[in-house]
Image 1 (cartoon, each protein chain N blue to C red):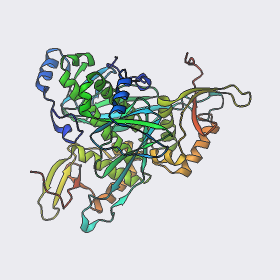
Image 2: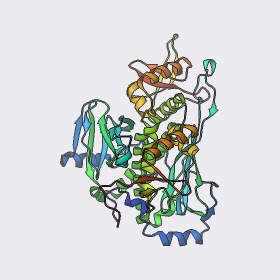
Image 3: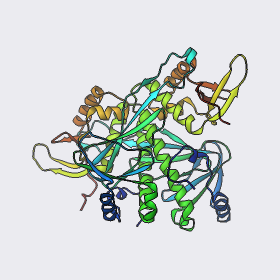
Image 4: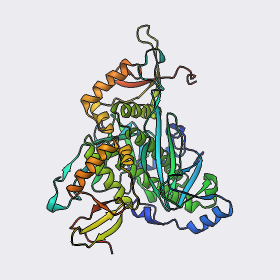
Length: 241
Length: 241
């Protein structure tokens, strides 16, 4: 196992002891399948692993709770739910609720399979535990890059940076050889609504739709078939073998 | 060591083998002191630990690089640097540069002391390695909460959420018993400029200054002495012992 560097390969490399973990989870009734957009009832203190499909992390918040009641002009209210990213097959996740913020997980595709365990269960697999922790280390680095993007003032910069990061991490190679619309690049394998994108970058569905149109007509993004978002490959780079 | 839950206490708890690590770093010339705003020349593949002071993480990006050159209307250009958070004393950090995004670290206060090691060096301290990985796991959760905040459409919501998260993590208890301006709450121990705040929440210095005034006059935030930002303690909670 290579644990000294955090690379994008970590993402696609299944855990080595994966099959043993799956067997263990089935034996102990610690796995379940979810339909698209079904909430995964994840609790703090447990570790979750995506076996198949994709999980969508979402955050919500209540603000204004810390107000000095006597002279507050801002009352407690629920804020928008924010899209926080995907957890793909072979990746771990955990949710730690913290007032005034809380995190939730939803299946992003049909037939998403999730298994779970207590952190103590990992004491039996120290090697696997290390891989899980390295995966979190990698996810943390990705979130720092994501935060860099969300610090941009212009919404179109936040949008393009956000799509670039997602496709860099999850994109699948795609070629369209048609004469009319030739394309070579990487596509996000799951659809994402404009409303979900807006909730990630601090914008609205309407603005995202307008800016996506602008990026598309500039050739910076491309939309494939069933609303899958793609980025063109750089012309000076080789295609993957 | 308690490694089964991620709690805010992790943040303030020094690593158990801390003194041995410091001795080792000094012996091997793997530590250095930095002045305020001095760049810490951190390289990918190395692990850094903040011994004293505070480190500020910053992200920068170049966008538009993936454009289809022939019909692109957006050219490659540098974007704003974004404030990505602090790394306090006793906490680890690492920087993994990834085109088109890169991360940098700066000393946020004078006399910030940082030590570093290769990940392989940690093989000598498996217990410590586990604590470092758990610290990253905690930092990752915090960043997810931060992303929830930055997904808010209203800038004032992003601002208040951002300050709440920072003070929840780093705030120090503070009481002002003066009759004129009595205050009881938690203060960020380091100043943060309005420009830095703006770079974190996708806004400008001018807007941050205006909204900070609004939050202050609503009693939602409070500014102590040398421009330190504070949140009032909730009245129905006990003070810390």
